[in-house]
Length: 159
Image (cartoon, rainbow, N blue to C red):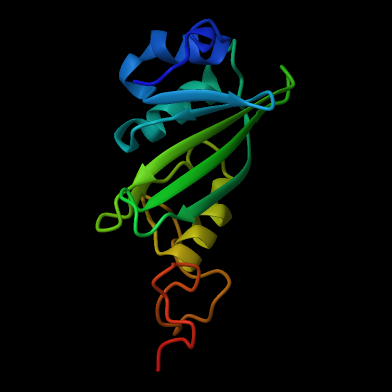
């Protein structure tokens, strides 16, 4: 685990680690915004905890995006941008996903706004969200082949 000593006392890091130390793989702060890397197997549970904990109250998923880090492994990084409106606080959760098993559990059961965000990430990057209520394309036509924001997508498209 890579967690700088000064972040050990950060309320969000401390509460997450008290809840489950294995759920915090890394943490850092840049320009005042905290980033926590969560192992994929703890994603949904960590999100439920962050949303429902009365001290943290991260009750808004403002954005969800993915980065294709090809040729690095794990290939994909999925970013969840959370907001605690009551505490006026932000948190970025990162989950790294292997290119061969590009699958995560849906968090649309935690934050309904994740529904369309997950569909967009699936459509453009090919990352599947298990348990999603309606995982289908949202931007590209249904018969589109491939996922156009992946780095291995042909520049000219498939023929």
